[in-house]
Length: 453
Ligand SMILES: [Ca+2]
Image (cartoon, rainbow, N blue to C red; front, side):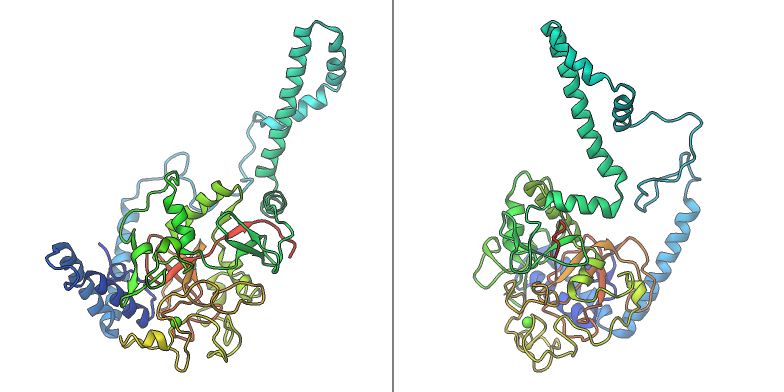
């Protein structure tokens, strides 16, 4: 059964203003005035109204949260009772496997991997080269056979080196190798971007092994992905078309007024974590480099707080790092530094609070790079859209409830709907379901590659 939070497409720790904004956006879409005679829209509107009635009332929301907790506890207990006994061999752990699992050594030595065979042959047959040299005096058929054999050995050695790199090199060493090999612009810098075929620009972020895209992924970038018939990903389910058509209070989201998403420099919104991951996979195949979402820790380094424990929410606590914002050290920036809930947003007259005295001029999304970059050359790290990160959320939510489960993904940054000083802290993290599509979350990509920055 879907929860009220799921029906409004918000996280369970969503601030009140986010819930209001989500309700407004959904009710705009499904309002009877726009869907006359549409029974399905009427049904959805009833669900939305019911959800908002509960979640907009603090007392009702608190009781509802408690009922959810009890329900999940009961379901977990039932699942444990009905779980079959462990099979043999045991099921795979959900955690990533160690590169070299500590398994008991078998009684008989296991067959050597291909690269070991090649190395063993090379050691055991040091005269093979001489044999090949002598082959010139033999009939051509023998020569060809020997030369072919030597070629095969060379190929095996090359394959063995590749396999050794992938399996035995370890994470950091492997990353360093892939960095120098895979990123052609290894000398990229803040002023000399690495630019891919979509025109996405990347800069190094010292302290990481990746280059960050200086802007959030644009609607035009995502449109290129969606236009590729060979993308190998079906964007289906609830809100699948919202990245092109989403709006808030009749203001487009993810594109400008009168603009098509396919040509827009606005950040793409209403894309789920799964959609973002699919985009990265597609881009990696297309470009021949490794693109992915930034990790939680990488995002922290990029926003300018590299020394916050291990970068995990539970290491930092709910209070975060006080008085550190993407633009500096006081809540209200002295100048316009990003796209937040400002006077233009407030002017939509929906009663959602904004940052008093702040006017960035955009009621919803703004074209990427409309505001000053941070010291690394990255734009919109603190506004425009929340950004999906690669990892699972592992911490507590706003109500202090344990969320140390793999159900949620980390979300960082702020958005055009946020005025809350706690949410706008550089260290603030939120989380959401990987399937959620909502007008306030987009994403930014990184490309694996050491830049020496
Ligand atoms: Ca704004």
